[in-house]
Length: 342
Ligand SMILES: [Zn+2]
Image 1 (cartoon, rainbow, N blue to C red):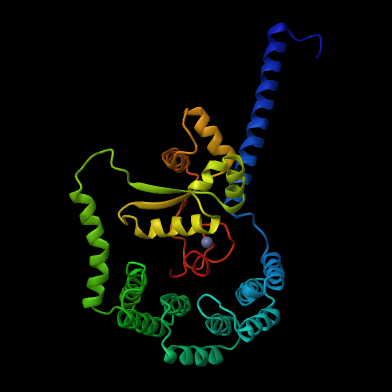
Image 2: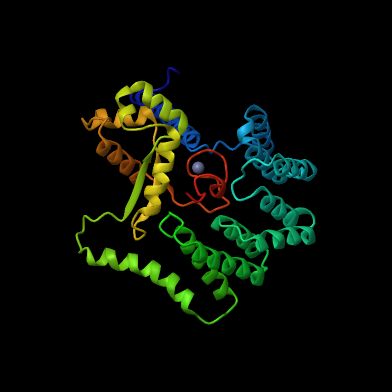
């Protein structure tokens, strides 16, 4: 420091330097926090080709999941612009004959529709429609693909066929989730087409309203929560949590079961609430429990921590769009992961 500075100037300069260091440290801390949160959610922005390669490796490693993983890889190669490779893997997934959520032929047909040969894609879809599959997600995926390219008549046709199929096969064991999804989609497309409201449109609207009424009847307690943010441990954090708190094993069978339970509780939750998922980490939970003198082994502590993450804006809305990344961090699309019918 130069000699012509007064003592007070030197103090001021040192204070500024400390403040500068503090801001830098705070900046680094916030960046780390964001990074670790993104990692929790599986959102590290990997390029599609890297994800495609990972799914290809997974396909080689596990014969039981080969078809599903080839199909996933195909989707990411298409996103990366490698259409020939995408086509080859779609065909390999079909030839494998193993289970693929939503039918491997549907994903190939949608690929043809979007990138390659729309006529052949439509012909395949006609064949599949004629077979009358039971899975509501097939109808919804195809209808949404047509909706996305403004082929509204075809979108409506698929929503109606799916709705008719769901009603024919009866309860799908998911509280009518499929029927409801298809009715909502159908109403949306009918509205875009300017069609007058019909009985099924009213039914879809009723479903929405009946939930809202139920909430109103429950009284006007101002403490009534308006959001439900579910506590969720992504796979790596789940394993770490079981190592850190072995007694938790009594409460959770496996990560797969934990993930499925979060999805099903959200599906059954009051739809008048804003539904969200708080992906939690072991370090954060331990810190929260210590700070509030609570026991992380108690489920209400974990629920309170999820609510805290939600207040801090560190949760995500549920459900994601069907073509968006799944909330669970698997890097699959929601419709091919936790959004599959139960
Ligand atoms: Zn998932």
